[in-house]
Length: 101
Image (cartoon, rainbow, N blue to C red; front, side, top):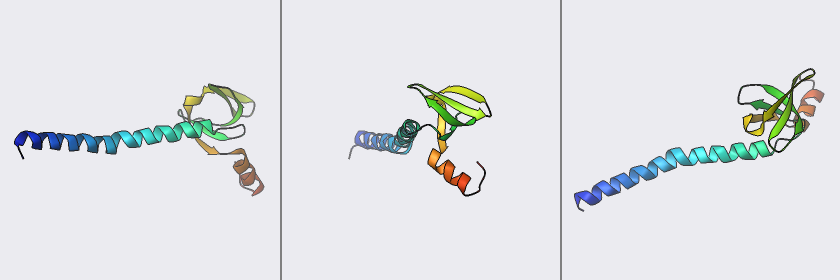
């Protein structure tokens, strides 16, 4: 094998390893996040990227209204949702089990 082919083969292998170890996991994380944000419904408890925890009161195409305290509502963009803490059904189960929310 010529030295030029060895360099090209080594470079190709490095590029493939970089793609598999860095780019693919990031794409998978983005797809999971988008799926999770689409699943958000009224009554779900969510966390924003800023760390605010609230219960979803209303949903629009690009915005979500969160209740973050008694009589305190905040409008946030859907992209600002980091993750769901639980669905409305899960929250009811926690209340009925005697645990605080």
